Image (cartoon, rainbow, N blue to C red):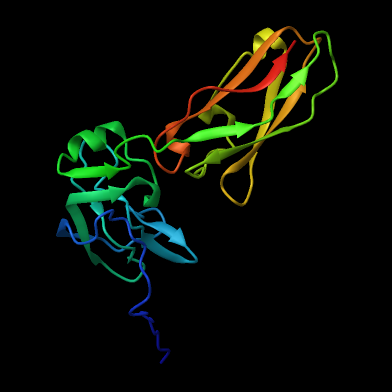
Length: 221
């Protein structure tokens, strides 16, 4: 008869979502065993169904009642999870930014940072001559005091203005392995017209859940 062994590594470092580790209240909630098509809150990680620490429970919306404290493996069966209902939570440690409705519902949880921590997106903009028709070189900018989340390479997660007026279009956005450096690929659709192209990343693609002011990445003059 084949034997199946599950290895549990005790004492392994856990992802810390608490901004103040010794000040929180958690209650126990059960998550059912996950499987393909019935994952619940679990995500498939290396062949295992894991409810990730920082998941908003039971959903990231107005029904939210807490935040899952640790990672829980629900591949082989149900799991009792500690769900924080009172405490201070680090937004940057969460797998997804809490929605406005979830934050409103979680009245006993404070999400850090409480205030802006000086997020900036800086780099050298492209300078284009009026009437130019050649594609400008890509421009590189870097985010300070935070990192980009998954989705930062999706154009619709950025507010981009000035493309129609200048005839300069952002065709691709690439994020480097450091999670902070971003490269904008620009396309000159027709003769350049005076103006600026600016970008603003959505708060949901920044680790702190905050965003930056509009940044000029190209100027036609």
